Length: 99
Image (cartoon, rainbow, N blue to C red; front, side, top):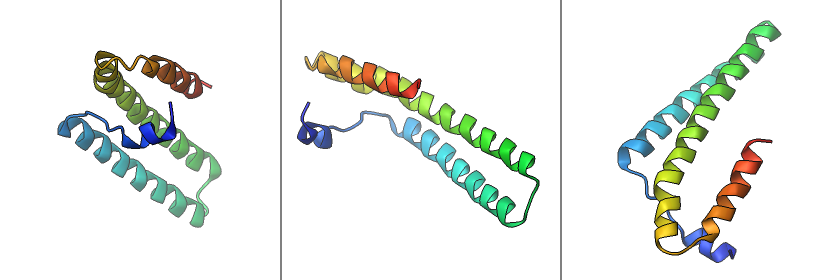
């Protein structure tokens, strides 16, 4: 698929879905700022590493929510429109996500 088509495509997610993901990302942003503060304050490394694991878990949660929303809306919509190349695109994305 050409990059021109990728730029013009849009997601088809309900407002509530987007709002939940953005709220979760805002909390993650706060966690990241907290980690930076911990580093500046010379907090014990193991405590900081646990905060990183918490952030990674939160990011994975948002990522999985987006993947689910993508499957249920964007992918379904494209398949209904006859754009079957979305399946290969999705498989490629999942392959990268699981590395």
